[in-house]
Amino acid sequence: EAIEKGGYEHFMMKEIYEQPKSIADCLRGRLDAKSGRLVLGGLRDYMNKFQNAERIIITACGTSWHAGLVAEYLFEEFARVPVEVEYASEFRYRNPVIGEKDFVIAISQSGETADTLAAIELAKSKGATIFGVCNVVGSSIPRATHAGCYTHAGPEIGVASTKAFTAQISILAMMALKLGYQRGTLTESKYIQLLYELEAIPGKVEQALKSNDAIKYIAEEYKDVRNALYLGRGYNFPVALEGALKLKEISYIHAEGYPAAEMKHGPIALIDEEMPVFFIATKDSSYEKVVSNIQEVKARKGKVIAVVTEGDTQVKAIADHVIEIPITHEAFAPLVAVVPLQLLSYHIAVMRGCNVDQPRNLAKSVTVE
Ligand code: G6P
Image (cartoon, rainbow, N blue to C red):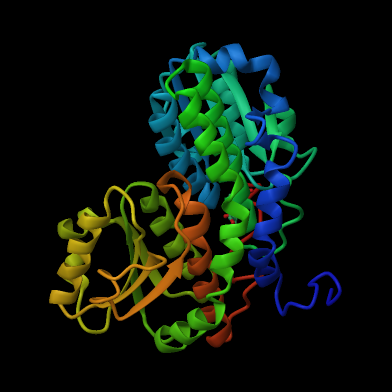
């Protein structure tokens, strides 16, 4: 097992550090910005269905569902197609309105999640086209779908998903770019620019990992808190959900993720000098609004820890701690912004003496409903 961990103390840390490579592996052979090439073999026979879909329905559980939420923003922005993101466990029992014009994307690391599998069977029986985004080759979900793409992230052993999440988003981003290009909602030049942006992500994740020591220092300060709030807007809202999930899964600290503006409708009541609020406050179209949300938290004496874009000054001036990540196109920011949050949860859990790779009560894949 020590050999399998490749010198890391836990699989989770190894898997967090593998991300520059796992994202690159996921893009390799599929995307080449220089030649404008974007090929997703799994889509070939279903490109017509994909392109003419009246709606995309994404179904998944847990972290994979968060990847689906990021994809909702991607598909809507680049391909202008309506998207719904559904918890598989709700979707399957809701008698959903679904038919032949729907293109369903099922996301699953393990490919064995019972609820996701059942949601696929249901959508299939209604005539929809089902596309899988899975990591484990030959698992049940890829076998149940019409077509799909593997994430090629390599085996993920830690129960808390890390590298599978970023690989899923990488596939979904490629799908959104392809669809936008085919549907003509992305111009050629914008499309090429975005291919370059996506291709640059592994290097930026590598950069983000360099904050590990600074993150460890922050973890030391907050390891004993009982609650935490994670806030982000736009593309970074699902990152807030994922950051909160990572913390609760492995450190057993109660954490909630919220869209930053929704804070006023509840979570703001929880803020006092004991409450750490983790903001994802990268330079994007909602940056100024997030800055005012940070001011609202500071006005109530909350502690603010913010993931910011390199060179940021505005948030730095008001936050208690900042973690810098390289600048990215906002659509791909989740791929980089989630990394410091993964590291933070990891260090807090280790400092609390928790079993990081096998947290209590959780299973790597939930094969019962
Ligand atoms: C479990 C795992 C999570 C995972 C979820 C969905 O809860 O602990 O890490 O995100 O299942 O699993 P899947 O394999 O379908 O992505």
